[in-house]
Length: 393
Image 1 (cartoon, rainbow, N blue to C red):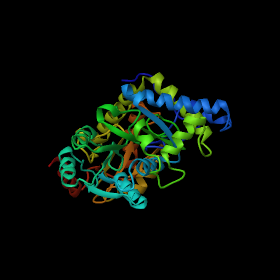
Image 2: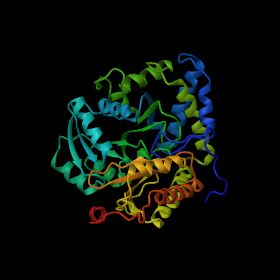
Image 3: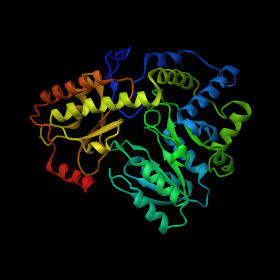
Image 4: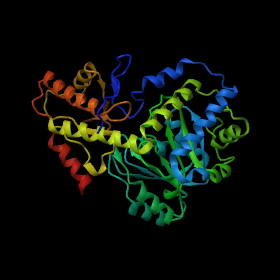
């Protein structure tokens, strides 16, 4: 449990209770005040340091893997990974239980790669036995794509059992760990993972502007010529960085500088275990407080990620998400709308420069917002609870 509160945002801006972009430390923001030449030796050294330090977060597998940063948002990196490591005659089993799995399947359609979509709906987790059955029945599948944390619902997917089924079937595993890497353990050696992706503005608490692909070196070398895209070719980006130390096209120099400071703070905090512990404590304090107010989570505790949590909207006719959002923003907190298609919901993120002290203030703000709206009960409609029973079945 933390005792000394983290500093509040220096400029007085609201806390971002989202899965990224998120609230960052002022020291991270300050690193963006200096200009860098993308061709300069100093910046090339920064790029090399960043790649090396990211590999340091994956443990014993680091010698077998390399890190390739890619300009753009996380979805750019997902597309780069799929387009580079899945050959044009390959086929991907996409495990979807929310928007990001579905987006990956849509991406494969744009790339002209074959896809088998296992769509579990809004939140049900894909399980290892399902993966094993599909792979046994479809020998054309070459790769499996898993979403580590599906932020549409906040579910932490069972990547270990998915990895075991994929390895047993002799297929290759790709992981979208966009919202989890840096706070949740991810050992690519144990998972037999060919490649995974994450982003600067998630659990390492940098700012938006680039993501990164961490892949086996032999997979990178074998991917030459696979890519459909000039700018999203992982092999070409890696080859150029290895040869010259430079990004092929204009890099987000200020973002890289900020990210290195974020890595410093990540290390000082205690690395992945400590970052994950703070986020877990944030979740536990916030969820308990919201439940005490009468709110219900979509997911049972087993599936709750320490990243973002989905709550059902109250059944009270005086409740509207827009009014609740505005009331929370007035109190210094920006929350996230829900993505469920069956029942109304909203989401509260617990990552970023926030601690349990902030989470208690979030609960207080929600209590006051309900009072402002004359909402007498935060209990969800019966249909929401019926929907939740599906997860327990």
